[in-house]
Structures are given as C-alpha cells and as structure tokens.
Amino acid sequence: FFLLSRVCVLMSALSRVPSYAFRVPVSGDIGERKNVVRDLVATMNSHLGWDEEETKSKIKVTPYELGLTNQLYKCELEQDVEAFEKRNMEVMVRVFGKGSDEMLDREAELNIMTQVEEEYVKCKFENGIVVTFFAGECLRPLNLLEPDKRSKIAAKMALLHKVILVDTDGEPLTKNWFFRVHKWISIIEEHLPQFTTEVHGKTVNCATLRSSLEDLQTKISLKNYDVVCCHGDINAENCIFNKAENTITFIDFEYCCNFFRGFDIGNHFCEYAGVERNLDFDKYFPSLDQRTEFVRQYCESFYGSACSEDKIMALLLEADDGALLSHFFWGVWGLVQSTCSSLEFDFTDYARKRLFRFYSSI
View 1: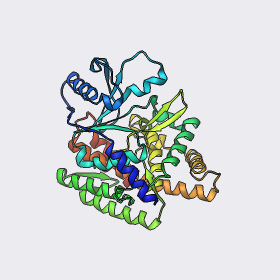
View 2: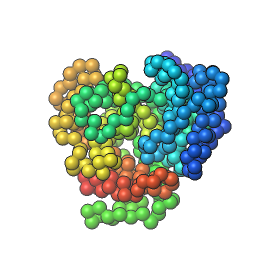
View 3: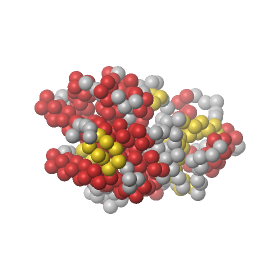
View 4: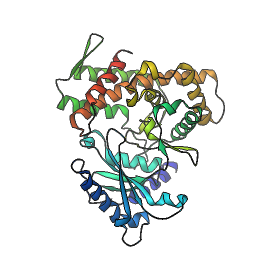
C-alpha cells in the first residue's frame, strides 16, 4: 500500500509540471538571453498566479553567477507588496549547461525533485526548468563551520536521508552513483581517449579510471552500508540561509540518487575547501573534532536521540569512504565538463586536483 500510494503521489506531481516549447540560448548577447527568459516566464504566468495585465513589462530578470553546470536567472514580478507576499512572485530559471544532457538524465532528475520537494518545480522547457526561488543567501565555505549553520545543515541532511527515491512503478531507483560515473567514463573514453595525468609517479588514463571505479564498487558493496536519498552536492552555494526565518534550504538536486549516506557527509566535508578556496584540502578540510560534532548532530536528528560513540565513529569512517569517492566523482565530472561546457572555468585543472587527492589517498 505504501509503494502504491507513493507512486500515485509521484505520478500526480509529475503530471502537474507543465512543459513549454522554449529554448533559452546558453551563449550570445546577455540582453537577448534575458529577453527569452522574460518571454518564457510571461508565457507561464497563469501557472504562477501572475494574472495581472502587462505582466511581461513587470518581470525583472537578474542573471546569477553561481554554479559550474547551469545558467541561472532570478525572475520576479515587481510589485509594491509586503515581503511575506513576495515569495510567490519570484522564481528561478535554470538553463541546463551545454552538453549536460549527455551527463545527466533530466527526466530522472525531474522525477527526483518532485519526490524531494513536490512544489519545487514550476515548469519545464526544452533546455531547462523553472523552480521555486528560495529567499536568502547562498553560504560560503567559511560559513560551514559556524555552529548554527553546521547544526542546521546536519539536521536538513538527516531529514533528506529519511527518503528513499522510487521510480514510477514504486520500486527503489537503482541508477545510482556507480551507474552515473560509469556513464561519465564512457564519455571521457569517447571524447578524451588520450587523457593521461601523473599522480605520485602513477599514470592515470581512461583505463585507470575504469579500473578504479570497479575497485570502488566492489569495496563499497562489501561494506553493506545503509542506502538513503543522497543529495550528492551539498556544497556551500547549494545551502540557502534565510536569516529572517533562521532556516537552511538545499537546492540543486542534479546529482541526487539512492546511495550510502557517508557519501553525502564526506562530500560535504570536502566542500569546506570549495573552489573559492582553491581546493586546499590540507588547510580547510575539517578536523576530526569538527567532523565528529557534525556527525553527532546528524545522528541526533536522524535517530531522534543521542547516539553511542561507537555509532558516531562508524559513521565517521563511512564518511571517510564518502570523501574518497567524492574526489573521484568530481574528478571524473571535471573531465567530462572540459569536453562540453561553455563556462569560463578550468575544468581540466579542477579534475586533476580532485584526482590527485583520490589517488594519493588510496
């Protein structure tokens, strides 16, 4: 009965996501791109409740310089209203990055987002989606150690981990982290067949990546970790802090899947040394005491009570495995992005740094 009701809710949520025949350019004049975004949002105004006349002229479009995959535009209907009413007059348009459809299953992503946050997705268009805009500020890596922010992130992560993602037949989603990375390595083999780099005197190439992934899959499967709904990318910028409400909200579920929770925790720890900190893991990766406090707060939220030191230590060790996989995951990701992304970012250098951490840790 649980699976049947879950499927009914999922199918209902997916059926309510309207689709529009719009394609937003990912390059060219920014003014022209903003105009297309404005046209898109004006067309879907009935789904947003923006039913006033001359809606289009009142839509303000603001590009956001965030993220390394997609282009983001905040759209708001300019009105003289109180702040608590404004939340229904703001949305975020997310334009998928060039070539990212080859990396990610967008229909599966939509399925996942409707399960995690049913009202999050407002509509979809040919190369993107329109989602709820969450008021607040993106955190920075330096915020992640602040006790109040840390406890809120731990509690929010624990809440997410109580979900198990299902497909439209009500079965747990099986296309997990390993399925995705296998696909990415195939893209690298096709577009960068001559890729090679040196790590501690070891030559790393496509064959090495494939072999390493198979070793990781064997290692993790033998540990029989609990499987949960992992966000997959809880970095500082994907944590929105609303000061007025004193809340943290997670955004961007592109890499969400059913996987072992240590990955989400370990990956989050890696994000303390985010891109703006030049991936200096030696300096910014949290200390054992800091990691222990995060895991303690996570366990209290997940289990509803204080946990034994043995349970906390076990999850810390699981998070160590997660951090290791995080380096491999984003290293492979960076190589794929280097073949297709139109963003001005050195994905190859990023990939080499993450792979260096992975191969120097095994």
